[in-house]
Length: 317
Image (cartoon, rainbow, N blue to C red):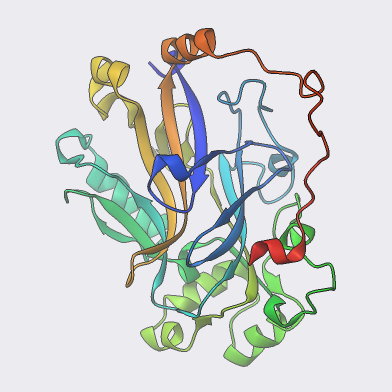
């Protein structure tokens, strides 16, 4: 059934599809997001990608570098909060905008236990709710966390921008320009897995942490278990194909099957930093849209100004 659909990835500052931009998957061009909670750059990489936009690279050099040679996808992002966020409040995870209780496949409970045991012990949620969710605290769920400088204290004329800090290479655990000192002060382990386990060790550690207004953070979330091309969960000794349980082919033919996958939000205020949505679009729907779409216009034909926009540092404000 999966070969009848193409994957489209969008990201935006809210659940409203009108606020979303199509992500250039597997490229070095991150998507810029601004919300009331902060400013972010988001990159999505998917191994063996077959989706939109047409002509997207099928892979990224990211997957040829250790330790990502077996990973299926990555959501890498840099962000600067616009206000302080309590350590216990910022969560990262999945949610849906509609009930799925009648479409939960057999074996889900076993899969969830494996996920909590092998991937994220801090994961919590309710898949039987009217708006199902699975969230983990960002400090223990994010695979890699790099703490950067207080960019709000930089000279506005320095030429700094978040784009200048963004790199296409995999993000490394650690800190720099004040970020490392912060880790040492709070006695946060240098190793990524140890840091995740450390923040699961007690609420006092979350209480002592604060996502600081104006500080740059870089993060990466990845794993080898979720295959977005097949919409399948592939755990050690266990495989679960989700697509067949999302309502069947007839249902999907008329309704875009989308998982509101990976939201970064303040769970106490419900403020969102960004939402990444993975949607399966029927190929026949795409072909119909392309058939009626107007051909691209040459901007030079009407004498319009073709000067490229160059964002400045204060454009993030």
